[in-house]
Length: 376
Image (cartoon, rainbow, N blue to C red; front, top):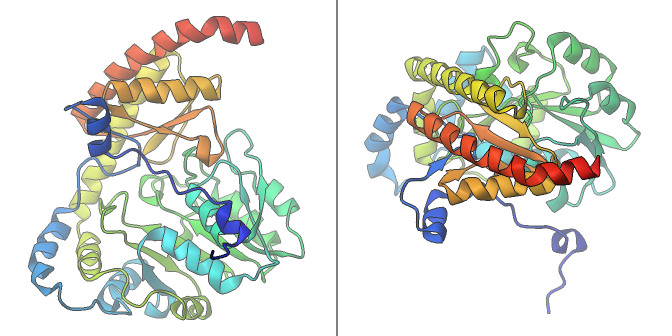
């Protein structure tokens, strides 16, 4: 029998938000709303769709290993050199490559509790030790992370806005943080949701910085609506990007992903519509949460984190929503066992979600109030 390393046997398969077709089979439902995976409710960029049709007849060709066209589009957009940009199949791939390229077995990775689950998964599957600092009022505790740096620390991971809390740290906080991080420690700044936060003057847009030990991650899965194609990119000093090219798979992103992403970057009209719809939907959720007296965390992303009294309450809330055709995300695997994340939707989706939440939450409160009061 083949010997399996201990750090692999200890892993659990990644659990994504439940697919619509799976819920339809399980519950026999026809009308289902999925607001669990922070996807764009408006669909993909129309310009991306147009380009996919154009290049579909070239699927017998390999994609450009250097993604020359897409890299140039990104570099021009953010006023970077092409040598400062690398693309891959989503931020997950880039995180894996960064860990592979810049750490060894005895090195430590430093991050926060209650952050992007993909970071924990990639750290574990590479057999790296993770040092995890608790959230502070649902925000990343940058000072706590600084204080936890050791001689074995090689990488620090920060998500801003953070997923699943939606919170951000400010320009001043980031500048202070980077001032005290040793220059031989690589800081990953994951900005998957930056499109929803960058109109905030206090938000530290990673593309504005040129620290020698900083790498910024972005994705086209969210605001540009290309989650199904898996396109992500990183920006850093050329010496960092050069090392990543040595280990990345040579033909990712795939042909259609490269062409669609390049076109999507030129679709400013779609991006504006996306941000407008996000604000409209989140405002409606906020009003509903206030009316129902549901605890939630103010957000700078395209989702809200609802905070419930216990793990059991959150788990049952998720299940009761599923029974009614609403898919939300229980955040227990993110390290927030009493949380439920819900992303913005279309007008119709938001209305239906509010209707379901307004039915489920009072029912559970009536059920759990005696238990909560007894525990107190």
